[in-house]
Structure formats: C-alpha cells, structure tokens
Amino acid sequence: MRVCVLGAGVVGLTSAYQLARDGHDVTILEGRDGAALEASFANGGQLSYSYVAPLADPSVLPHLPAWLLQNDSALRFVPRLDPRQWRWCLSFLLACRGGRARQTAVEMLRLGALSREALHELVQRESIDFNYVRNGKLVVYRDANAFDAARRKMDFLQAAGSEQRALDAAACVALEPALEHARPLLAGGIHTPSEEAGDCHRFSVALAGVLNTRYGVAIHYETPVHSFVTERGAALAVRTPRGEIRADAFVVALGNGSAPLLHALGMRLPMYPLTGYSLTIPVAPGHAPRVSVTDLHRKVVYAPLGERLRIAGMVEIAGMDVTRRDRRLDLLKRQAQEIFPAAGNYAAAQTWCGHRPATPDSKPLIGSTRYRNLWLNTGHGALGFTLACGSARLIADAIAGRAPPLEPGAYAWPR
Ligand SMILES: Cc1cc2nc3c(=O)[nH]c(=O)nc-3n(C[C@H](O)[C@H](O)[C@H](O)COP(=O)(O)OP(=O)(O)OC[C@H]3O[C@@H](n4cnc5c(N)ncnc54)[C@H](O)[C@@H]3O)c2cc1C
Image 1 (tube, rainbow, N blue to C red):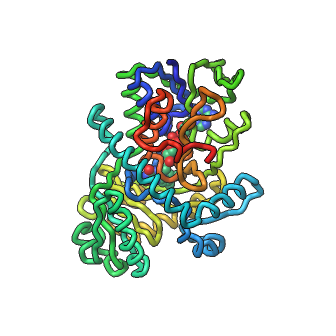
Image 2: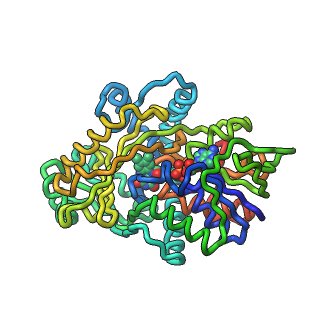
Image 3: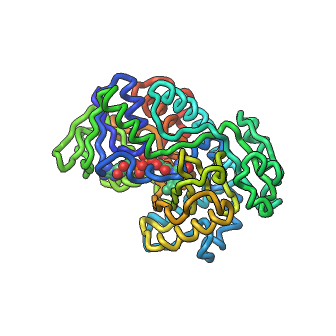
C-alpha cells in the first residue's frame, strides 16, 4: 500500500519506520527544509518511560493561582482572545479529576513500556548514533512534603513494573556527585535506574537517513501540505506546492500543524501548543551530571548528551507567542546555575524555544478518523520522544488491521 506520512518530526519518522518495516511504500512530506526542526529539535532529551503521568492531575489545582500571578512560575498561563485556548483549559481542568487522571496515568505507563521495547528493538537493528544513554533518572525534591508524597507514589509505579528507590540528600550526591553544590537544598530524591536519554534531533536525522537508504522511503522536504482532496469518506490526495500527492493511506503526524490542517475537514482536534525552553551547554568534564536529573521544584530537566548538557523546562499556555523568550531563557539559566553552577560553559549556551503539541489529558491522539484511510498520530505533548516508538507501533498495527499489543481505544479520538 502507498502510505503518505505527513510530518518529519520524531513521531512522523518513527511512524514511517514501522510502516516501511511492514512493507508499505512510504513517502514523507515535511514543510521545513530538514527533519525534526520543530518540537523535536532541542527538547529535554528524556526517554522517561516511568514518568509519563499527565500534567492534568488533581495536585495541580492548588497551584493555579501562582500560574496566573507569578512571572517566574515554571508553569504560566497567559490569557488570549482565542477560543481554542479557553476550550483547551476547560478540558484540562476536567481532566484533572482524580479517577480520570489515575486511569490516564495507567494508560500512559502502558504506552511508555511499549515505547521502550520498540525503541530498544530499533536501536539494536539500525545502530544509530544519538548520544543514547541508559543512565537512569534522579528526580530531586527540595520540599520534604513533596518528597514524602513521591515516596508514596513509588508503590504505584513499582506495581506497574518500574524499579525505583528513595534516596536521602547524601545518597543523591553519592549517586550524582555534580549535585554536591545543591546538597543543602535537597530533601531527597527518587532514582529510577531504567530511564534513558538521547538527542531527539540527532535520532530523527539519523532515522531519516536509515529510512531513505535502507527502506527506500522518499522524504520530500520544503513541501507544506495545504489541504486534503477527499471523496466519499476517503482522502484521495494532499495539495502541496508540488501539486497533488496521492496515496492509499495518510498518517497525520504534524505536531502543532495537525489541528489547523484537519480543521478544514471539520475535525476539531483538542490540541494547543505549550511553550517550553531549553539550553544546551558544552560540559566541564567531572562537574556535569551523568545521570538524568529532574529538579521537581523548578520543573527543570537535565540530560547528558555526550559532551553537552541539555537543560529544559517551563510550560506556558500562551499560544505560539514567544515575546518573553529572552527573559524566560535567562530565568532558566539562573535556575540551572543554582543547582549545577560548574556544569559547563553557560555563556556558550545554545538556546531554544519550542511548542509541545499537547492535548488536555496529555494522551496522544492515535488511530482512525471519520475518513477511512486518514489516520492520526499526534498530540504527544511533553512526551513525544519518549512515546514515539510505541505510538508508531500502534498506528502501524491499526493500518495493517493487526491486533495491537495494548488496548488502542485508550488513545483514540474522539474520546
Ligand atoms: C521544551 C520542551 C522539552 C521537551 N522535553 C521532552 C523530553 O524530555 N522527552 C520527551 O519525550 N518529550 C519532550 N518534549 C516533547 C517532544 O519534543 C514533542 O512531544 C515531540 O517532539 C513531538 O513530535 P512530533 O513529531 O509530533 O511534532 P514535531 O516535531 O513538531 O513534528 C511535526 C512536523 O510537522 C511539520 N509540519 C507541520 N505542519 C505542516 C504542514 N502543514 N505541512 C507539512 N509539514 C508540516 C513540522 O514542520 C514538523 O517538522 C519536549 C518539548 C519541549 C517543547
């Protein structure tokens, strides 16, 4: 079958990989002039299979006033005259209900486990280089109450198969000596040895190369998709500046471009861009963390990527507006220097601002649509790198009509 994958971010590329391995004739269409130049470019680098709990959780509700009022809050809401923003926020609040949030967390853990298995298989088969490390993750807490709550949550994750242990401040520093300077700030940490990290952009570029050279996948860059040609409940082609491109099936993996494109077909995907920021600094050997660290108080993640350290964080519900970019990046730099002052050359930091293609309940949208050959694989929010390989398996199974390894209805849209 001729399958056209729309989007060459990490989700489109991994989808194309599974589809090509199934023997389909795959083409990728991408608006930018290279792979993974949007949300997949300089993200936090975490392959964080055990930390996939949704942002929408009852515990965020008491923090809402701070989001609205504090300029330096990790999570910020900037109101806009945009009904999409308000609809998204309302759905987000509904998703915070206890029962629903717990069910979502279980479904995300299952997709995380499938994604880990699928990524391991891909890495073994294709041996691609993307600063991939199985280095474990240490989530550190500054507040004793928050640390206690996290310890209680460990039971839940351990029941789901995640090996974890709680460490006091001294044990955190023994595990990750680069935390020495931050020791007085720490109440403790939770260590998950099985977590991984890597460079999502390098992964995507390498995978694009593998797709092209080993699997014969054609990747057309600088080919924005403007609209669909449809007939009798099926998509026939997409309209692009290169003309109409026909296929037997289409997979929409356009990240933040998904909702605008499908709006014209009467589909209102519940997605909104959540802005975040990252810094990439050259490391000072011996002073930068080798374990992935999350400073939960600041909601900042640190991932070692070879000779570089990726520092990422912040969530802004502000649309595609980036007018606060410089101020937010300065704040991120100060927060990083507070915990890892000697990690590397902060003056040489490469800065980035990206937009997570997020759904209100944090679950991606994977599966069929009202058009029989038009499929969705989008809306991966803060976890697209982590969940890409499992999501790709699910969409390839759905297109092949194969029984999936886990209940696909959990990720279907509409929910
Ligand atoms: C600050 C930050 C930190 C993050 N940290 C992590 C992390 O540590 N771990 C993790 O798992 N995830 C993380 N994420 C989330 C992750 O980066 C995203 O979920 C993921 O990159 C989404 O991939 P995607 O392929 O769906 O979207 P994208 O990478 O945005 O790809 C979509 C592609 O579609 C193209 N496109 C859009 N519209 C059109 C059109 N009309 N025609 C043609 N092409 C089009 C775009 O150019 C783009 O290349 C982070 C995100 C941010 C912003």
